[in-house]
Image (cartoon, rainbow, N blue to C red; front, side, top):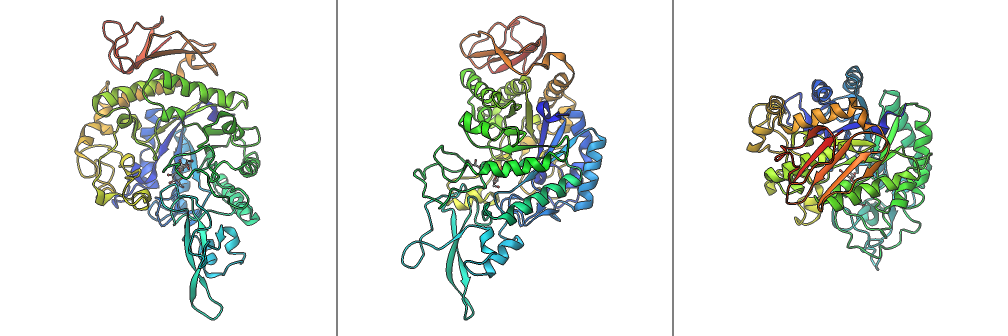
Length: 522
Ligand code: ISL
């Protein structure tokens, strides 16, 4: 059964979801205690961001042991209990895999540092001599996604004892995240082991981090364009989307094919539709995140173009499209669309657009509460991008502030201690407890929308048909079915398409669809 093709998946940023032990950091037992909430919300599956052993230089995306749980989050027994309970609640569990890099605290990397140049230990990573007479220039001009050079120099052990300035190693992200060498068979074997380890523990699938990374072009040629920017991609970027990455995805798929009903979704930052589709060939990923909708401005023409590209990209390979408006790397929708009441109205409208589309939809924890980004003071910022950019990029902490459950500051039911990032006063009105009581809340809107999506027959139909719509508006129907979704991004109220109203993201105006509003009809 291909449950993932139309699933709604809830992204739990483990650190920020629910803390069971008062240390201010979310954990596995905290998630377990909130499964009833996720069932009530009406999602089908959960994606857990990395909870593996990690020094947390990039909050878990720097993995020191991919087959164990970091003590701050729990242990393997607690993980097993979470999987069992989630399944009891009818929720599938997917976990993050980080195959592009390890932590610099991984035993492999420590061994690589202790062994000299040319050793098999170094061959698991990308070590190279530097350029220039003293080797003190990096081997090529690649930039780290988080700012600064993608290379760091190490001390090499000297035969007569002691250490001397030595080789450089590649890290596309933080220096604490050395890139693995995917031409090394040991690296392949280890990922296979990790896949089986979690599959055998009962996970329903994986989200694959930087799925367009891993493979590097032969000879690591200089980039022509190094202005790609932080957390951004560029078409001619040699760091990503190398053709040989597809061999890795074929290996992952071959393993998954031994476990019926399990699926992988890749984080694929590749804008070209044809190159994106390559990741979704029948023997590669089951699904790929397409980020066009997340990046689209609140403008009907731009939103429509994003949807059309996302649908066209998967049509040829018969994969299901995926949709997301938010994740732990990007400003939250409420803030992106203008903040305040306006941003909230638009985020609600876009949620109805996303949940009306065929395919699977991802909801990032707190999105269902309409949380905005939080303006954090410099001294609490933790994202490596803040330091690596020389304090020019504030990084992604603003969208990672913990989820407010109930009550007041400082912990809002997220923690009995001090939350790892401060939770602002405006969270008081946005708690789960407040919103459950209010039928007009964003949480109530998501609950109703998810219930309709699960139970109403209008949501069948694998494609969309576009209707003519007034300037600044869009309307589509799920093909061969009855659901119609209309969105107004213009500045005046417009007539609705024909049909009975199922749900609107905000109040209508004398029967008209007001600006910054969406409606579902059937
Ligand atoms: O590389 C990019 C563009 O081509 C970036 O957008 C990059 O793919 C993205 O930032 C990767 O994010 C993921 O891996 C990071 C981690 O910090 C993020 O949280 C995670 O989502 C490194 O593991």
